[in-house]
Amino acid sequence: MTNKFINLSGTMLLTTCLTLGCGGDADSAPTVDSDLLGVYQITRYETAGEDETAGEGCEPLAEPEQSPSHIVLYGLPSNDDPDEVLLVGQFCDDVDDCRESVEIKPALTNYSFFKGSDAAGWEGWGIANRGSRADQCLFEVQSHSLTSTSGQAITIDTKQVETEFPPVPPAPGTPVTNEIECSVSAAINAIMDDSPCKALFLLEATFEANL
Image (tube, rainbow, N blue to C red; front, top):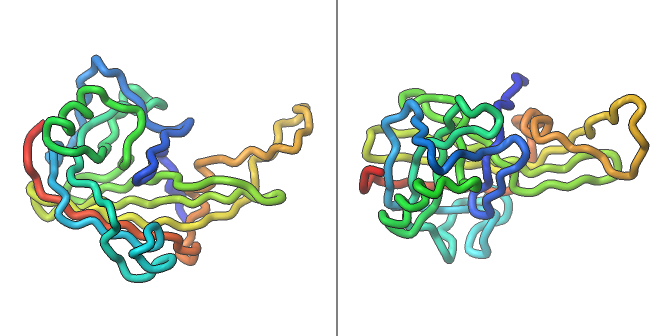
């Protein structure tokens, strides 16, 4: 399997920006090479495995009891490299709220995409759950894929899978503790074609306003 790790985003609904995640300076005006920036009205949002109305695991998608109404796409500098600007997405209530989200530039985002283009599609990752068992790390990783057939519509597919992998070995000479170090990059690289599927998310939205 090729090394897919580039950086780390927040998760879908419970946003989390971890050590290798997103950030940004509220006074900066970051730009990203995309014509998809703007406010979108969500026309379809369905899940599987994360809501009582949906099936278990990766069963057929269903509309949850509560769905976000809008999403805004904008550029946000990476914490790791201030010169690198990520394409990120944040849920919001309406056009004004979406624009305010961009001005505030929250460190927590619902989606962060680390590579791709408007023509080829964008890819990103996020961590939904993390833990450990015995001498193994257990992470649920979300893989995001953003595509657009035109500048007026976007689709974001997300698959959440369970990964299990060995912890980072302690550095020579460090004190021995009961805690194990679980690497986020290792969690992303541990995604395999047969990784157990825990949930699916599907978002479709149409362009409503510029930033």
